[in-house]
Length: 101
Image (cartoon, one colour):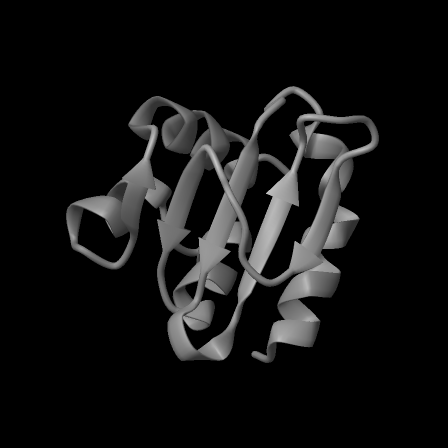
């Protein structure tokens, strides 16, 4: 899985994030990061970092498994494969939206 492929998958799902209404940073360490801005309409997804209401840190492979429904966000968090910085409440809301297809 490359950042290009993951970005393309996430861009297809942008309409799902309208109700999120905030910003989130998906930090994949040395592999890069994606910034979701759902505070405006339409929601946007860009590469890079920036101020975010919540930050999700995990590997790209685990993130791909999570958005593909093969890994529960709750299980990923409980087992340390997903780390959250910032608002935990927003991260939980985002996790619910990531599970929807």
